Length: 279
Image 1 (tube, helix red, strand yellow):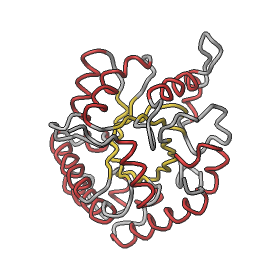
Image 2 (cartoon, rainbow, N blue to C red):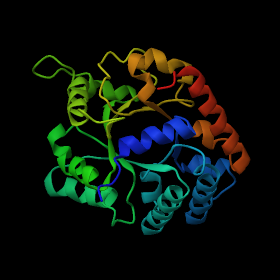
Image 3 (cartoon, one colour):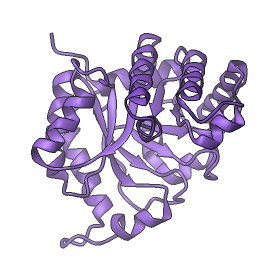
């Protein structure tokens, strides 16, 4: 059987659960704020609490792989369990690993995150296209086969990104626009939503690029980085209905009580729904 594409599953999750992605980012400072040690026991407790509190209500959970990798194999084991339990509770899992390489190495990354037989198999993966969009082909092809998605870095919320992403390609387009045009080509004809998304920072003001890519637009920067749901229409314009706002500390700082996490996520979901017209 051909798996249902990620874009269709994401559209349904956003429409039913609300358009919100919550990061699972176990910073050392967050563990401390929760009264936990910065060790594997603290990591396990933090991650289990977030998953149990939110996986049955938010559309997407986004673990940041680096914060698990820093604990070695034991941290990866916690990440594997978080992916499995989040998906079992109905949340889509977007693995925030920002992988980007060439040839067989990119293929290995694709096998790690986008192959159903892998213990880290996720619904989608963030990828970096700045070795050339064609370098992503192994991940794009693997995603089609498994019904997964990829989110391509376009215009990120960090100020340093502009020196690469706003640079000009030989044909006059910015590199970010060139990547977005590639994303649009991958999604051509897909309904109700393509499975290749782009990462566009919510803190950018007017993004200054064409965001009509027929795919989801992951929007980091809500909360601690200064953006609010009310900013989304101004940044994304006509494409705002495909935006998946992403928040981490703005929800996670309300732990360690599960009720605090739920209330923060529900409140942000309501604010996004109020700011963004229904698709």
